[in-house]
Structures are given as C-alpha cells and as structure tokens.
Amino acid sequence: MSGFMVELVQEALRRTGGQGTIKLLPWIRGYMEAKTDPDSAIFPVYRIAEREQDFLWSEPLLKAKWILYRRKGSLIRLSSLEDARGLDRIAVSGGDARMVYMESRGFSNLQVVPVDVFGWKMLVDGRVDLVAGSNLSSLILDPEYTVLMPKVEPALVMDEYTLNIAFCAKADPELVRSWNAVLRGMVRDGTYAALYRRYFQTDEFSPYPLPPVN
Image 1 (cartoon, rainbow, N blue to C red):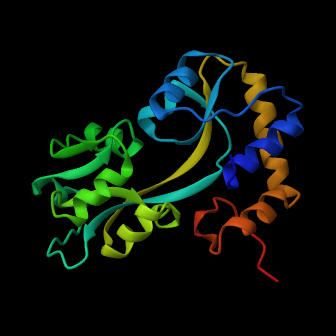
Image 2 (spheres, helix red, strand yellow):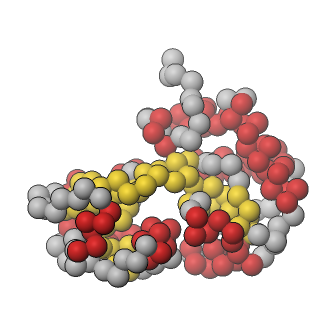
C-alpha cells in the first residue's frame, strides 16, 4: 500500500511507538471492525455529524468538497441541494458518507451502487441524473476513471468535510490524544507539508495552511 494518507499514518504510527499494522479491507468490514473493536481504527473516514458519536477522531488528514456531478452537456441546473430532490436518480456508493448525509436529509431518489465507478458509468450512459462525488474524484488514477472523468462536470458543491482516522469509541482516550499530539507535531515540523507536496499540486485538499512552494 502507498499514497499520501498511508505514508502519513505510517509515520504517525512510528512516532507513537505503536505496534499496529495497516491492513486493506473491504469498506463495510473495516468500518464495522473499527466501530466495535477497541484496538482498531479506520482511515480515511469523513467526519460528519451522523458519525460523530460512533468514533473518537484524529486531527484531519485531508479535506474535500462534496460535489454533485452531471454529464457534460446535461441541461440539469442546480442552485441548491433542494433542487436535486426532483430528479429521478442520484448515484451514491453504498455505505458512503454522502449516502448517509443525503438519506438523513430525506432524499428518496438515491441509486445505491456497490462501488464508485459503477455510478460514474451510469452517469455517462445517461442512466442516472447525477453522481455524488468529491473534488478528490479527479485524482483517482484508475484507467476507468481517467476515461470517465472528462465526460462529467460539477453541478453543485454540497458541502466540505475533513477526512480523519476514526478510532473505536471504546478505544483508550489517551491513545487518541497521543496520536493527535503526533499529528499536530507533524504539521508543526513540516513533515505534513513535505509529504503533501509530494502527492498534490494544489493546496485545496490541505486542512492546514502550507508554506509557499519555493
């Protein structure tokens, strides 16, 4: 495994002196394990109000704008999230934070798909009106996405949230405090910024002020 957040968490794990390991699991399995096992955590997880009491939370790792995307050339125009209620179908990934967010607001026109790419394919094929994604979607390097993303465009920014490590609510609070102290230290000593610059060409995903590029 590699990537910005993996490297960030690996360094935090080293600095905390922890003996933990990072495993790649199916989303639902990993989420439920972190929710019930005091010795488990999951990342990255959007920190939304609907999940707040289920976990103890780390400092932010990244931030992202949630966006409703339409097919390029679509006549759909949205001035607010309420405007999307009248559409036939909006694709969301099952278990995704955006699904939770929209269901909690009474949306009944959601087309739940097992993985993100199915929703994007359905949008491009005209089988759904919108897809709930984020500005991070454009960074996915999977070949299927690189074909699909030029065929869609933002219709509405829904909201902005941070991506965090979610620790089990039964975890030792002192453990979470130590992780947060380490993460804050990585921001202060420039480790966060140096790692971020290796992966991103824009500051828009950082929840922290970054020094200018030399």
